[in-house]
Image (cartoon, each protein chain N blue to C red):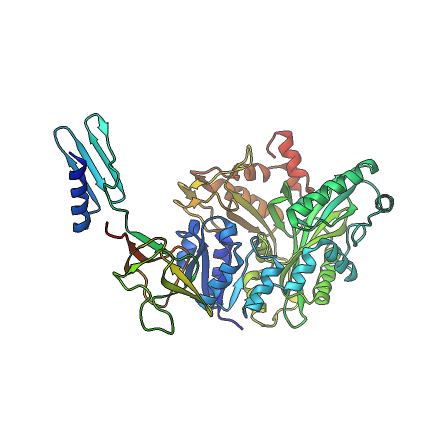
Length: 136
Length: 450
């Protein structure tokens, strides 16, 4: 098993939406997980750099509030699914009284699905929105 | 008038308040930390909201998060329970500023009573008996301090004005040790309470801890609901409480109770409060007022037949008290054991998962607890997991019931102080009544474990 082959397998996994794969042969055993990689070939262990993509992140509420997908004065969502976002960019807002607190992307990525409906009361740590890594 | 209450606390008292609210038809909103997310009382609330991670400073003590939680959930009132922010005047003020009702007295009342020197002055003015000693800040001149101490008579105790819970105090046996003790206590007080003011008063050698429960509405009516004896303490933490305080003449108690009620009226007190006294040789000495619901409130509920928490919420809603002092009686006797998740050899907390949870029951037995089999006792908070409360026609009757109930209660998976309680209720001096506040520590030092 070469690093090039590993690279191909992880790309196929990402395309097919497979999170975990185990493969065993006469002289090796391989387990790949999105975000974690383990490989063994008899005696040696190898963890090839860049063998798997960074995992999909879930952005959580930093405080209590009412989760908004869009600014109250705008019709458009701040981060529609599939949009490319930069680190620090607002993915949604938390309304606390008259205050609007942005929920920001922790890193560059592709905005995923909203996990909570617009105008829902959320608590600290509630999963709000998925953030997918950028394609390499 | 409000119809929804945010419960800014956790554990058994969050459940107790929730029950009281439900009984009054009020909507309950429970806030919780990540550590308490799966607690059953959280699931039973009308609405639950996580306000922060496990450490109390990031959740139950996070004033902004609590007020924001009230804002987004539409809660109209906040019940602080006991501990955490229940006696924090700034929090009470912030709640009021946010247009919400703080279920408790005004911020001004909390502030006065939180400063022991100011509280003592207010109580003296209201005719409540206090421990001998000045009710003003100490002078700077060492010779004047020595003079004051000599007037009181040694031993004296040096206390921090902002202290409480047994912290920030030091006993001084003789004059040569006074100035050193003052300096150390001042520094400790500055670091611990942000207030370096200290005062001195007479140190009582063998006092009992007796307290008077009061309840006041917003129309100038106030009641005292009887006495409690909380002398069984370890490191100033109450372990076992009872109502009424045994062996105190009714006339003396009624006189002190009436003074407490007068004091409530004079300071414009609203809600529940407790006047704590040291009692020695049938003389009462005020030590402090707790401006909140107390852990040991159930023993008063059992002997008065009044749901104290419901009454507290009713007066906060602006209702008038519908009972008069003449309606308040003391029926029988009640005990409460604080069941803590701690090993009684070293008194260390014992967090973990409860694998066996068998509760006592039967006539006159009540258990207030949020725990159950499979419940994880968190290392982040106070170790109390249950309060076992019993009631009987007489003290002996209640004590006999308590012995049986303690034997019935079985908790496994974590260590508890049940063995200590079982020994305590068989201690001859305690069974006779009227032990002083040093009794439990002395028994523990003797090695007999009470």
